[in-house]
Picture (cartoon, rainbow over the protein chains, first blue to last red):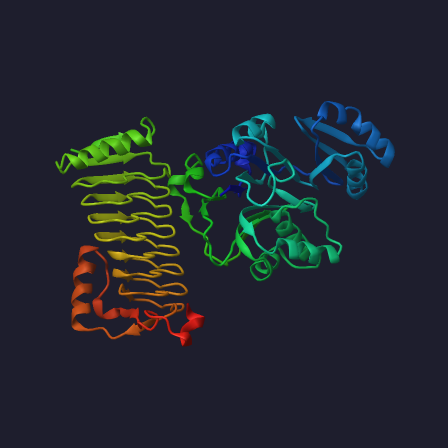
Length: 296
Length: 228
């Protein structure tokens, strides 16, 4: 089944409340996906710096002194902010590829990277995942979240959504893809590698690969309708916005709400119930095989 | 005076039990439900004369299996509203999500906004009026009843249709297998005049086109293999 939530703020006043609003939305979707939960949050950017979010099952060992070790290895300043099993490393732009290679060499799991995006995801009930990472306290311009009921691959941290396959890009998915193995091989031939056996990660890699080839976000999402087979309601995040697309059969639910202050996405209306001004919002169901996106 | 049930204070099961007992008492009571917040399965299984107004939007399967009751949603309804409805009236003031009125056997489902995909799928005698437009695969395998749409219809309208009658005022994106446009006869115009009045719909019977089954898929024919 799975639950998806997304919130894109049009005005700065709500930014400090982004994590709080998204957390309520995420917890409301618990009975659609109690296995694992995750959130991608797009926060402040600092010119010239980039972030890499990592995960470890033994953070107290792995994160201890990691900033110094990485700083020495890359010969650049590195800052580390540990949050439960995750840590966000901040380093100069252009050094993320070398940092990711070094971190993977140490057996650390890469959640995502980018100037703005941080990803936090774990196995467990959404309320526990939210508490573990103090999601309520996080501010930002937009974010997407997912509650997972696993079908295509194991219940693990790496199998949880969102999936990120390029800087500041991520994808959450309700449904299941049926041609993901074939697409994974096609992408691998182009040199686009995935980290897991998960179908959604292939969807994310497909979109990233199209964007890397020069497609706009809208064109990449259009491409999913042609090239991906199966059931999907996708919500994708980028540095500047988020996009939504549903497969032509559209049996996976989706509802959207828009006010002067925000655009919100959810699998069900229930997730909107506590949003400010929802009574007066324009609420509608996104059409099948139709790409929607909002950018600032 | 209406009895008010507040979902901010009462569990869904307590509210549905109260409504179901009132339906059994046959006293034609009036209820208002506040703070529905998209709850699932609200006002389900009501099998007696009863008037329920829900002040807000509902989630999956609102007013399912309705019999004799009048349920009004003053908001939008999630998937499967009025599923397998037997009789009575269900009114949605906003939009309805997918498979509204699925397998319905009787009564009137009156949707003032749009309905999305699979509206009236496998309908078996229900009358559905949609004041806006409907999505793809609507009335799929519809057996009996009437689907009246003031707006437009999406792809594959009436695919594999049996004897349900479909009336659309706007455009039809495409017709499904074995669904064809049919002539509008006096009895159809009479039916439309009656149902449009009942549904308080602002439209004239002569503005609609009628669609129905070509009946060519009823029995297996090897020449139709592609359509099955």
